Structure formats: C-alpha cells, structure tokens
Image 1 (cartoon, rainbow, N blue to C red):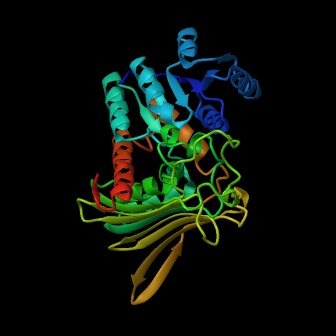
Image 2: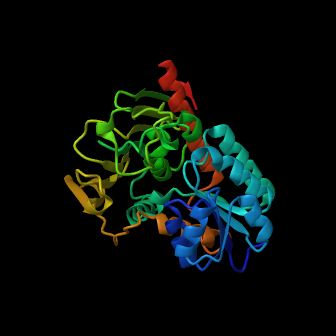
Length: 365
C-alpha cells in the first residue's frame, strides 16, 4: 500500500445521479472534492455548480493532468467503462472507488485487481448494501459466531415493474454486461459477504426475457428510452450456486416478474441460527415506502426464538456510508468494506450464471 495520505482529494468521473451520494460520503469522511469530469461537459459543470465543486472537465485524463493534487477518483459511468477508467487511474497511481458492477466480466475484474496490487492503491466498489445498518449489524452477529456455519442462503432482488428504460445502456448487453443479474447484484454480494465469500465451484441458472420489451414493466429508474437503441438482456434470472466448501446459494434477480411487490433480501440458514435482512417496497416501488427487517432465528430450550435487531434508519441505503468507508480505508482509519479479490469472485459467479443460462448445463465458476 502506498503511503497513507493525510487528506484524500477526489476527482469525480461521471455526473450522474449517484454522484450526490458519493460526494456526500466523501465529504462526511473529511475528503476534498477537487473536480468533476464528464464527456458531457455541460452536465459536469451543472453538477459541479450544484455540489460546490470548483472545476469541471470534459475528460478524466484532462482532469488528472490539470489537478495533480487528486489522489483518488470515483467512477460513476456505464458498466462498459468501469474497467478502462479504473485501470487508467490505477496506473496513474490513484485510488479508485467504482460504481457496481466491478466490470463486465471476471477477466476485466482480474485486470483491475492486478493493477491495484501493482500500484499499491486501494480499489473498492460501491456495494452500498453492505454499509446499510441492518447489514452491518447482521455481519457483526455472524462474525461473533451467532449463526455458526452458514450452510445455505437465498439472495433476492426482484421487481415487478422495474425495467430501467428501453434502448439505453442498461438494456444493451455490450454496454451493461447484462440485465438484472449484473445490475441488481447487491444481494448476491451481501449473501456471499455473510457466508465468508467461499470459493465457488459451479452455477446452474436460467434467464428469462418474456417481458424485456413490454412497456407495462417499465420502472421509475434508469434513463430515457432510446427509440433506435438495443434491448437484448434478460428481465429475470433464477440460479443455484455450489461452493467448494459444500455451502450453497440460490439467487433470484428480476426487473420484470409477476410478483406481489419489490423485495430486496438475503436469508440464510446456519448451524446455530438463521437470519434475514430484507426491504419490502410499496406497490409503486418507491424507496420511501420500504420497510426494513433484520432478524435472527434459533431454537432455545425447545422453543422457537426470533430476535429482532433494531437499527437506525438509513434513507440512503448505505450509499453515503460506503463512500465514506472508501476515504477512511485509504487513510487507514477503517477496514475496507470490500476487496478486489471479492469482486473477482463475484464476477466469476456472474459469468458462470450467464454461461449456464446459455447452455442449459452447470457452468464452472
């Protein structure tokens, strides 16, 4: 690791909606935001003005050349550009905080991890659901041994009407890497986080695209429709992953699936206790209607004991906390919430899920 900085100075790459959470988290941790870059200079200037950032640029390279004081960057761009921009920043000796997914595939994630190691720089990803109070609390119980060995888990991020537009980069596999499997990977990551990120062996999965062009299933997120754009990703996936440890995990991801309501959850079964971390949304899918559950389940004295873990609410769903942790990790004040090695493992599993869905057979991870 490079010498720890006394203060982190960050350049933001990408003026999209997630920038406000990154900026709030970085500043909460004491970092300075020196500049913003976006290929749409007007967008960069508008966001910079709103967030009181002094300088705006039309390219990341221009920003880094003009602002040598920047020692870390935040990457908030379409998935295809995560790896190229991260590699360029790492090779230039900058720490990197990158939006999810880590990359389009495991090959790119490996290259990013190798570059971070060679540069001695911190590379982290915005797996913000790890930073939710419910997740932090549950991980503490798991680490203390309350659950015992987690044998199995179920990861869900399912939506009824959640396609993020049609023809934009979200629905273009060349730009996004896939549909909800890669977009809504947070619960898969969180389940692996609780399980100790075991070494995966194989995945068996099936994707579905019945509703991917049906405008009844469009959600309130994403970007405007592009009439001449491409829509070639899945709208749902169900899968099963086996690990070399004998642990197993089932996953369900969807933007469009005929369910009652949106659910974001991880359930697990351990040798001492089971657990649940879950957000259930209203029928309209608006975050403000979500209710959070964090519980442990055990058998004690022949009785079923259900423990409710009550934590403070977090309207940002961990987004500010995840960004703040990046700064604290760079400065040696906190342990990073995620690592490049975990990102590689996650992308190996996602690659195997898509490979299995294509062949109809189990795929090695």
